[in-house]
Length: 472
Image (cartoon, rainbow, N blue to C red; front, side):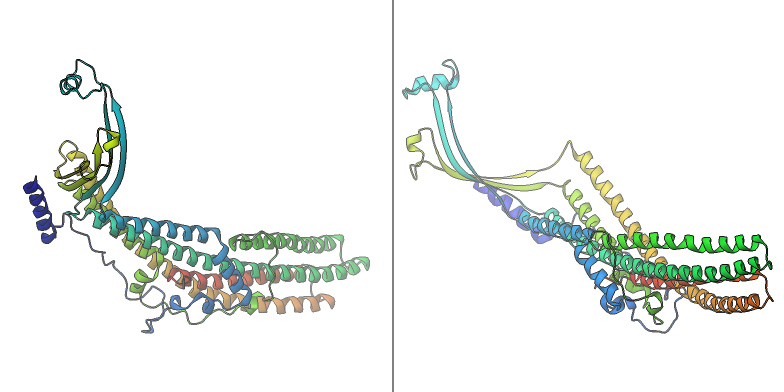
């Protein structure tokens, strides 16, 4: 027995010294990245708006309050925090896999063998004066498996990567929350502006309708003119409850996003107060890999996949296990704790090699390799998606800026045309149809301008999120 134990220990020492690895990790691939983002202005500046803390990027007071509330009270964020706590506990638990398992066993049993059995005949032969056998035992049992092939090490590495993934998931949720709250707030300000535009247009149409009715009473126009002017006014009036409805729904959505019950949202700013940043530095595309939480999570998934390959490979190799047991044992309760006579101890070492289930273990290993290859592809895809999102946001900002300029000029032109049409109509130099057409055109152009301004602000917010900003 002593030689066997010494031999087992020697095997263990040699295995540890050789630091044998049963599998080779796949390194994180270097994805193909452009030198600059498409539509980005090349300045040579490597700084990015994503490095700015969200409180310094979104400076409007009401918006800051909404974002801050969402980060604290949003239920997705709270669930993410709980996921981090659970993952941290699992990571701490894996560290104990290196420690031998120790169990306390206390047993007591009584057995009455058959008189014709070997045990029964032995009892009669030794004449111990009893027909039954009692056995009392109290012992500590120790079991330990040597981590020769790095299985426990890979389990620990996988648990650490899983824990880090939960922290990246929390960051990703926060970046989305910051972007969603800001975009929802911009949409709310746009609806406020559009409601104001519709209400002003109702007053304008009402004024025109009164003039046309006076002309009708004077016999200058027919009833058709009154009907068309009235229909124009009703069309503008219909927009008012529509915008009021949309405002209430957007307020409810924002309140829920911030972890609050649906209700009104007090605000002191309007859409025109929102300044669109002119400097939207993107930095270099390679920084996305380390800054965006979803890409970082995909990179950590490769660590987990590598670990699973190592674990499944180690299962195919022999396992060195050492067990020990010691305590007190007696076939009489009165002698149970008679020290040292009742003391006993057993030490054993074994090498276990899977045989009949080797095919299953090999299949598990091959599946783990395939999953690792899939993880590499998923990482590359996450980087590609990130670059695409940044490029999309940049082209939106660029083209919306052009649209905003054209739309603003169109609004100015139509507002002047409406004033001219109204003056000409009052002086009998323009028809009521020209006035109605001018008023309808200015209404639509002003609504479109407000929508474009909202889209510009949302595009900047989306660029901030796609670059990985918002979790700081």
